Amino acid sequence: MPKQKNLVGIILLMNKIRVGILIIGVTLNVVGSMWASDFHTSPTWLNALYYEPTGSGYKSLAESPDFFITPTGQLDPKGEYEASLDLVIKQDKGFKTKFPYRYKLLTTFHDIAYHPSVTLDEKIVKTVIAYPNRYMNNPASMFGHIFLVLETERGPLDSDILHYVAETNGDTGLPYMAKGLSGRYRGWFYRESYYKKIKYYNYVEDRDILYYDLKLTEDEQENLQLHHLELQNSYFYYYFLDKNCSFFIAKLLNAVMAEQVAIKWPYMMPSHVMNDLIASDSLDNERRRVASTKLFNAVFNTLNRHEKQQVMRLLTEEIDTAPTDPKVLKAFLLSSEYMINNHSPLAATVRQNRIKAYHALERQNDTAVRPTETPATRPTIIPSKVLEASYNGKDRYQLEYSPIYFSEYQHFDKLNIIDVKALSLGVATGPEAPTKYTLDLIELTNIKEYNVVLNSFSWTFKSSIAYQDEFLFNHEFMVGRAWNLFNKTLIYGLVGGTYANYDDMSDLHLSDSQVLETLEVGTLNQLSTTLKLNLKYSYKYRNDFIITELLYKPQKIIYGLSLTSKKDETLLGVSFRVLF
Image (cartoon, rainbow, N blue to C red; front, side, top):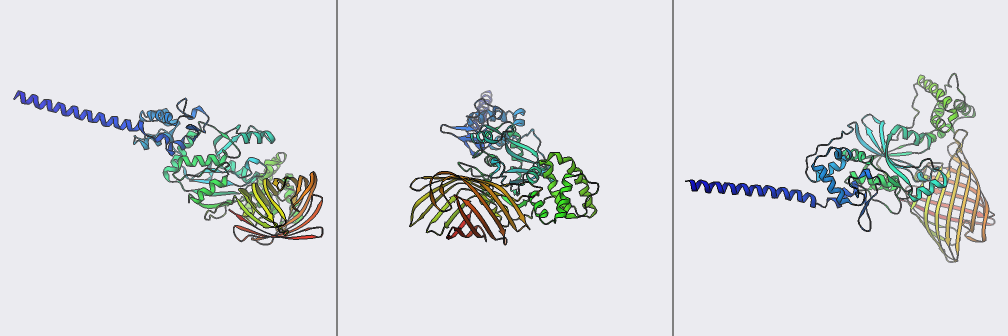
């Protein structure tokens, strides 16, 4: 019996040893699989830390050491991952608090208990993506902006926005352009009050804003909040052309969403991000908020002389009793925010009169003044490129492609003309002349209506080069005013100069490089929501030109028919532009 008991004991002991070895082996295998994981090369990890591939590995776009937990974290995604995983296994509170999104990613991937140490804002119910359109007075905003609205259950006015902005330290002019193009500004993901920013865009900068509901899952909505907490730990270098607001908003969305936004090279524009999200069905409910200055113009242009004088008095003199005419009161209120922000000596007067104007409208039960959003519609692609084919009447055919293009012609019912074209490539050919190759470096048209309240000026700028037997160039700048007639016609006048060795109106070489005076007077006429008639007289290259142009836009194509008269010659031109 003793021998049998000893034998049984030995067998039980050996079984315990086997079980222990098995447990240790399984544990080592699990831990080993954690450390051996290639998660550090996955898009999830690389996107979360903004790593970009280099010739020899990776480098994060985040510049602050506070964004990493290892000294070499910016260049070493594997080392950063391993050090982070070690802290996650230990449930390190400091790591969980500073990097809550990375903590969530690693606990999910490695099936580790998730015990977050940060509290999310439960009032946020959805995320809206906003696209303020072009602002021609600022080169960095010439192609628009993009930001996220973290909308609460109480609506946008009680919400914050999240966007990427450059810290320019008040620079303007050439230093501003040089630093912006060379990446010498720091950019930050900045959170601020929606009301404060929308007030600036909509009331001061005269920018329409498009809104879309971003289709985030509950998990992605949580990821966005967690990731934003991490982004406060770093800055990124800002470049006007590529690493700008649209690029970093795309990177932010790629870090938190399953659906990936395509990164365009060598330049990024807000429309790239918006169109990619629309194409992937990630957006819903397109709305537009029209700038208050445009609403003001629409009302002000219908007033008679006496009514306009009443508006001006409200803007410049403190009154005892407000007028009773609702059109006068609304025109004043729509322009009041603009005046407060752009004419500070009048701010106190305008604020006092604004209170009286609101009270006067309340007594009439008519307080609908502020800009509102248009009803939601299905999102549509924002045209940002154009392909144009034309015939100029002298057996000359031209084809031009513009990869960077924005125009108010997208909304054909507008009188103001804002066109932005850059890096347009073209070729012109015909039986009577050699082939000409063109490159329009940039072409800007900003025809905006002027009135005594909104002191807007109009201007155009063009810089182009070409090759046809020799190198040709044409650089032009004009400035002037435009006036609205009955919301149907815009009359404008521009003066300026041209430095060129080529007459692009007559398709002729000049004898030499010349600086020439330039004059243009014209009208822009809105015949219907799809039809425009433009008439203009131009004095260019010491010649007189009279041009009549009829434009028809039923959908995404603009059909053009023109007559150009010069001395005894009149040419019929035909064109069409495809916006996409």
